[in-house]
Image 1 (cartoon, protein in one colour):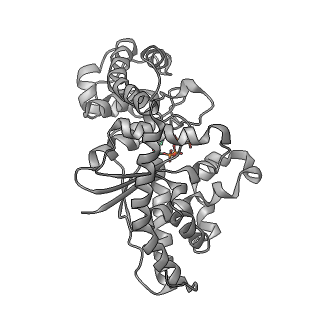
Image 2 (tube, rainbow, N blue to C red):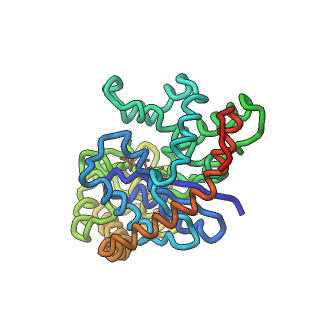
Length: 333
Ligand code: AQP
């Protein structure tokens, strides 16, 4: 059974993008794989997080994952509770090259014009992500399309580590980028991905939004004046239309052609109504179950602590061995 690792930042309320690009796939993969899922709080502090609410944000993200269907078949924990991540990330900071990280488009997008003022952690983020995966010798990583470049870097880091320290220790990993909604775009701008930390709440559907809010956001979503095409090729150069059709396809387990068979030729009005009803139908049970978990924070904490113990039992020996390969003086435990 191949081992899967994936993570999500508690940097806000999870969005429909996180759900379709990652969470829904994680739930399905539990049957066939040895799965480790992580609320990556170390990653989240690469941007400012309010200490007064951060622990609750971490619990909230865990509650959503549990509500969406992550269950006992998987290990679920918060990253800062397993020190192996930070230990290996430091080694990888010393393996990865500045030039490699300078090419990362996510850093360029997030830092924007403010490069001199962002945290060093934001720049080194991909090294921590590589450590998250390699600390478990995981080989499959289900992520949204935005993470493809970071996974290529994780493979470069593994290869250089293995070469520098003379042993095929870290395996190559394979991204799993699944479905027509592997990159859900902002509802306000079809060229920008939907993001939980986007300053505009109207740009995204939050998994906690109620039915009226979801309907309003979809009704107001940016579109063009043309009706929907009957053929998927007609979605080229129409990013907003493509995005809404992709979301519909992902939620119904269909594809662009399937959705356009039913809705092609029609205007956006009726399509948006149908899409809003569908999104509400899929998200309402998750929101209700999330509230049920949040009513018992101790149960969430227990679940995360158990997960952390299981995760550490896998990662500690792997990172110990990596440190031995580096040549650190290690004492018998
Ligand atoms: N818009 C998206 N479409 C498809 N997948 C997405 N993911 C994120 N946004 C989309 C996937 O969700 C997983 C968890 O992401 P993350 O929280 O670790 O970080 P992120 O990619 O930076 O997500 P956000 O929502 O944009 O967070 P912020 O705003 O804090 O930066 C990943 O698998 C990601 O691919």
